[in-house]
Amino acid sequence: MRIVMCCLAMMVFAACATVDTVATTEPESPLTCAVDADCTVKNVGNCCGEFLQCVHVAHTPDPAGVRATCLREGRSSVCGSADISGCQCVDGQCTPRNATSIQ
Image (cartoon, rainbow, N blue to C red; front, side):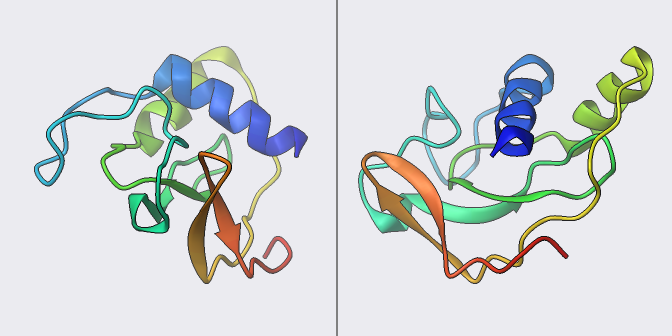
């Protein structure tokens, strides 16, 4: 959970907020949702590289930006991410459905 929170904090500070071609506006939070269809698995990145997470379909993650921030600030993180088979909206937040342990 601590890793996820760190990644979310990095995304907030390092992510590029651009409008997705499918959605008209990007959500306030990358995890905000109203229904399951609002959520999808995307590579949000972390200091090690690829990090898969359930986020809003209109969210545009910037894994390269996250990695650049990590290099610039000399930070590191645990490598790997859970194998997420799908996402669901629970209490207004995108969450993994049937995720397995970190690979």
